[in-house]
Length: 84
Image (cartoon, rainbow, N blue to C red; front, top):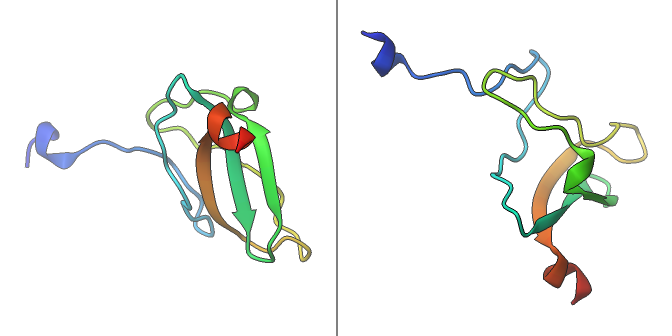
């Protein structure tokens, strides 16, 4: 198999880590909304996160504690969606 057929590494993750959500951010996406296992939610601005290239280690969106539980979902939110 040649290099072109092998694919590329998208992200490096640890043995105990999981990818919960992966999205492409567009200019009108202003917020990231994350939801944790125990019902906790977090709304943060996209500008708070650094840009990732190929082979990066991802971005941590929050601490995993007994109060929050694991992160179970994430979504990009536009300013218009946030106002509704």
